[in-house]
Length: 263
Image (cartoon, rainbow, N blue to C red; front, side, top):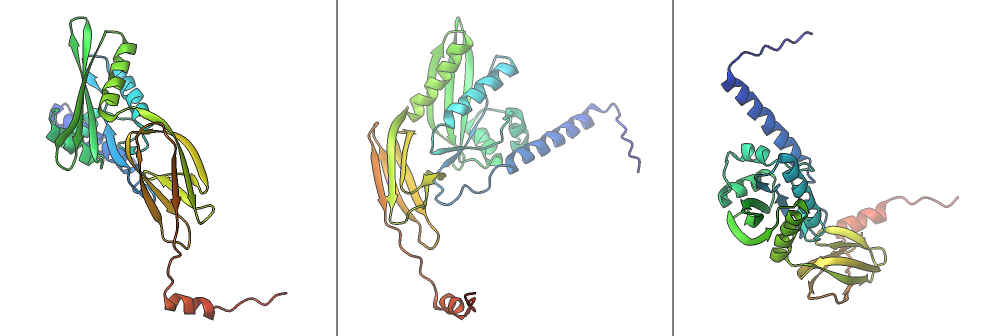
């Protein structure tokens, strides 16, 4: 079979084709994300957009990658949107072009995010102004914002972006987490991510505030605890798992199964 493609000079038609292609790319980037985060999900799904401002696209992309690497260290946050973030692709799919909270929320819905982190870089005489905004997707409301200044060097600009994030979320605190249960080898989830099995001793950097522990084992009902990180103190959690109740029908079926005779 031979397929021949004819391209005319209709710029409007070309633009429509480009938009269609970009929309397909966005859809693929979004749907390759994990659809479930395991049992005990408590993580916030966040779309971290590349910073925007009067810099080259390569520099903005690099700053966005560095910011996402920092955000990914926070255990309560799950990054969504794909490995390569291109802001305009999400804008095309969301059908909006501005930076208002409603538009950012629409972009977040495309990525199936709970929150969207947007960073604007403004050129001032001899320095940069970094303005960071965190938007709730469901309500299209600004949850938090932060501002930082820096000199013109890229290193200081990156540090200003990081400082704005830490200003909003707080620093990561090094804590030792000990989780034990009445079942050895049970899976332990921290904010929706599996971090090990019981008995567990884990030294990890966590942000200040609430975190969620869930312990899961076959044949037992899941157990969960809420912990609160205040400083760099150690945290000990003990979970008593209860055996899962088996219905009489299942129990009868198990007893009715023929057992193999010993050889």
